Image (cartoon, rainbow, N blue to C red; front, top):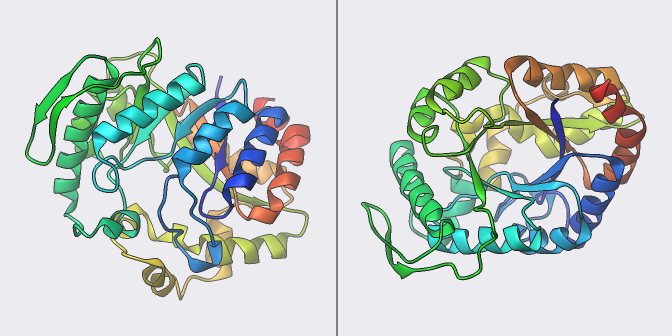
Length: 321
């Protein structure tokens, strides 16, 4: 049975609103909730970027049932991996075991703010590998010393740990990242319904309960033209693909890179309007590729409450039907 998730999109909503949406999404019947972790939105029009971990702490108290997850945190530049381990353990305790730590190699957009430059992708993977090793060691308990090419840890210990270690998912995009991270991580994270990624992960990761977690943007609303316009305004950055998106340093870069993206281009890639069947069809692509979990992103802050109502009444029953 596929799990269906709701995305707390920090780039388009303020912190108080996100906490409210989290409770409403649980009441609507979603199985889990993921939260993005950014210092910047992709486009100025999105207008927000609150601290995801502070929001998560509040969400643990505003919800009781749903699983919670970062989608995803970069534990290499803005955050030292030892600090990420401490944060993950705390959220694991506050949520009473409902938290899954999603990790990724990051984007220039968010990590450049600490003034350390932006390394090439092979170095970012090396850094993420070391970070995962450090985080896993700290979440297992006890004192940790670590000396790697990119990180050092000196006699660190996380003092407040949940009864069961927080599990880790890693964002992957191809054969190289699967080869590196599948043997280490508990779960796969990716944004494309690529069956080859799922098959490759299954070969390299010997955990039969490993989850394969995807994400899909949608723009539901009663007026399709208005939805297409809203999706173009706020989500045209999506079409660049992560190999491009990871390299752009700021919102001006994303605005320039997407200046020739048309409304029709966005509408072709993202289900827009009132057609529930179109959303179901898009989600089914992930299920057919072998994903166990799919999180939906509803585009537009002002549309969240209406989307959650239609999700409870029509969308989730259709997906589970």
